[in-house]
Amino acid sequence: MSYVNTLRMFLRVYELGSMSAAARDQRISPAVASARIMELERHLGVRLFNRTTRALNATEHGRLFYEGALRIVEAIEAAEAAVMTAAQAPKGTLFVAAPLGVGRRFIAPHVPAFKRAYPDIDIRLRLSDRVIDVTGEGLDLAFHLGALADSDLKVKMIADCPRVLCAAPAYIARRGMPEDGAALLAQKHDCLNLRFPGAKEFQWTLQTAEGPKRFEINGPFESDDGDVLTGWALDGAGIVLKPIFEVAEHLASGALVPVAVKTPPLPTQLACLSPSRRFRDPKVQHFTDFMIKECREALTRLHDTLEAHQREAEA
Image (cartoon, rainbow, N blue to C red; front, side, top):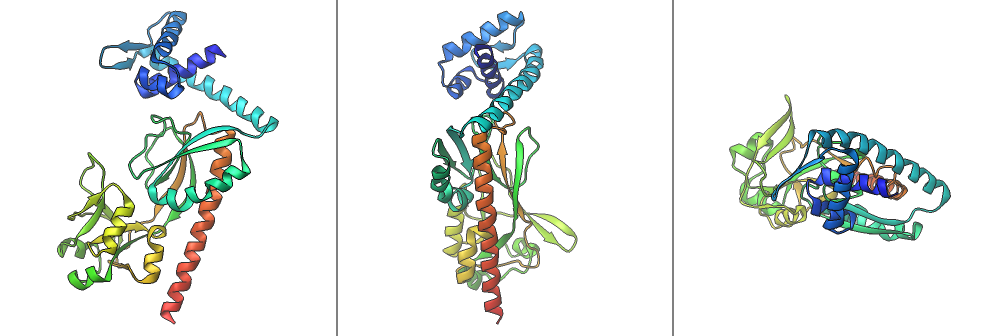
């Protein structure tokens, strides 16, 4: 297994671009990591990385070797996963990430039930609305809400999640009811933005009569926490764009009301992402299947509840 472990070490150094980061990921010392890479280079008779005091970059030989090493390690891990699935219950630790709203509502409440079903699997759950580097941060899987970028990650689609533009009645009484996206800009409405360091100008993509259109919006408040934006909206600070599941109770109670209804926002996608090498891991498969089922059932219940409230309001 020593050569396989060395290949795994090489893959992580290549993917993270750092010997120390790869060592932390593999839970070994930087000295051991460096020794393994040097041993591999001696074995191959080529230099795999160019090293300076500030950077570590793969050589052409390193890039070529990465493709082959990745296929080998993936094949070994797939074979191991198949044997483990057939021979024993899965065990080990899963490192999972999710957006705050998704994690708090759909994932965290069901972790204890998953643990009861799979007592030998431990969960390390990280919640954040920032963009997650699944591979670089050493995660086994991540739940993702939003458009999917091209990547080598394995993707399991969970559901399309409808979204809504909404505001508190107090805000509408003060600023008026915008009928569409154009009115948001023309009337200079206060839009509450989910934004991260280094983000460019923010845009909301809304469905117009001519098709989807991007509206460059701004406002006095920004945060990298979606639940903070909901709190500001409830306080009458502005208009927020949210997945309906995050504000359903407030829509049902009337604490928030839909605005710009002539140009509704496009749905967003909820998906589960996993590095290709970990996709077949029984722990990942069991947790993914378990949580996808819970997410879909919760979204269906939410949809049915909102429809019932709408029928009551129209009666």
